[in-house]
Length: 389
Ligand code: GLA
Image (tube, rainbow, N blue to C red; front, side):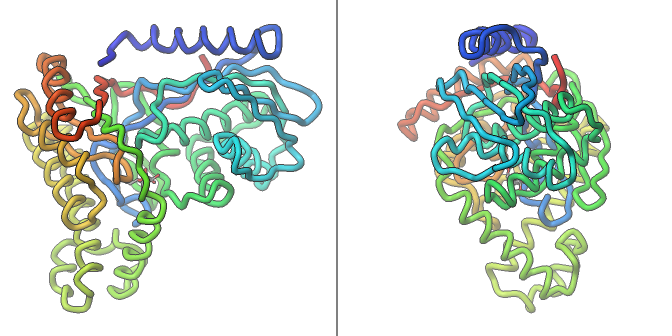
């Protein structure tokens, strides 16, 4: 469990980055960029259906120290695994080795495709966003470097466009067909708030996280093996459902309309569609409950979201179910669900502040006993999106 003050965590990362920069390149970075991970409170697998999501940026970050170079090259040193990637901005290729660097090259590629002239740089980075755990360490990297490129190269890029270009990098350069949620919230998150994002209009509304509750993230530490292939299968199933129902996207279908036309869909497609249309409805109700301070209702909606993801969308797994069911038993828990793409990664629980520490102490041993895995629990706050330090 870790809950040091935000500044202390970022300061520690900044210290690591500055020392690594000095050691690898000599001298000091001229710009420090801080880019957060994210957690989604509710609205899962809705973004690529033009629907609604309710994520927050969290106080776990990628911190990047940078200094411009004039020869069109980029060097990036990852302090956490002592590896340096080097590439030229005019010859960007995806590689299997140093796969972490593909996210950075992808962003450079997407920005250049859009016509931006980019400045090269030397960079060092360190992160406390757990990797491959469903907290968007990859979006944190992409959006952090997009922000670095725009700042050092001297062009304006609004937060939504930055998110769209980072999504394009991930879809077309890295090869993961994700929706817009992760890059959007990392780009535009606000401390103390969740964002209700309309993934069709790409507008958002802020909703303050109610006082007195913590976002507790429970990392199963089960690697998300199936995610890529199953993710694409789910997207295809949703598109098939929308086509049969004659709509642009499942966003355009209400739960009642789906029930009325159930007979036109095969059973699997029907269940996938039922998750998406009910999840959109739950997400809109959740933001209303949050604004009204009705934590009880918000928690019920989170629990229902988990059941729907587990049974209809079938993207949960044994470890996530153990974590969520353990959470449901604890005092002071309003609700808990898997969060992110699924098949491993993290669950999120909404816990009364005074119970948060005891929660962590109770859930970790239950999870270890049932799965044999040492999970991790982080008590998090909603934080700002990408920014210079
Ligand atoms: C992954 C994707 C997001 C979103 C979630 C599921 O995190 O990157 O775009 O689809 O899964 O809600």
